[in-house]
Length: 123
Image 1 (cartoon, rainbow, N blue to C red):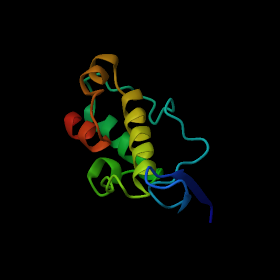
Image 2 (image 1 turned 180 degrees about the vertical axis):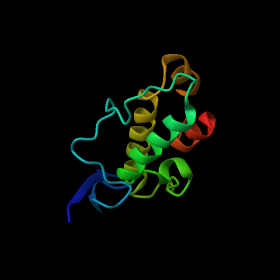
Image 3 (image 1 turned 30 degrees about the horizontal axis):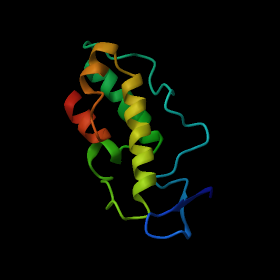
Image 4 (image 1 turned 90 degrees about the vertical axis):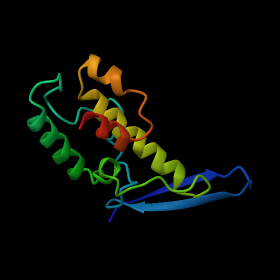
């Protein structure tokens, strides 16, 4: 099983701390994951929402990231060692969804703070 190790230095200590996530953990990102990645072939422009929605759900499920839009993967406390990685993955999911939206629709939801908030705006 593949593991990712995150090392960070907290504000209250100079000591580096490691947090590991296996490939099945929702905080895990693959080396191939990038903000510019396209999850689906069809951009949502206001038409065909049910099919587009299904494609996004399938793609996020395959990446084990559905929890970021359905509320199952909530933000940890700001002082938690997991918060930085949660924020990184949340931002990645937001980027993926924004890349699957027309410019007009993306502009209307770009300031969403969480992937769930963005998703709820589209629903």
